[in-house]
Length: 125
Image (cartoon, rainbow, N blue to C red):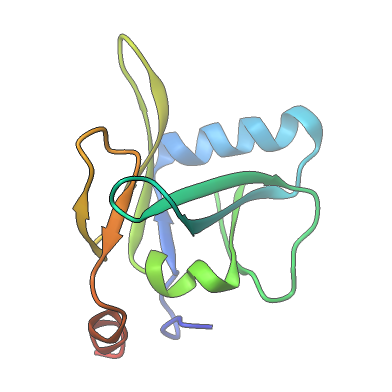
């Protein structure tokens, strides 16, 4: 929907692809659907859920056995994002390295995106 021909909407690191493929295999899911919603102290939060089917309006990115679907309303906000999977001593989880984020709260759970008009202008370059 907001893509550039020949360029994937998001990139997936090998660690993230391995984890997504593992999660897909566990319960025969079609992939992970990612999106954004209003919430948190910075204004927006990422969402992730197992997908049992691919919506025809989803942007689909497949890599190394992993499939990520981007919900239509989130595509503009997630374009150019790198999805990684990090493991540390205290926690593990997906990390979004998103060039469209202007600010984040102290805990890192919520984000604020650049102005929508500025995002559209950047992505059309």
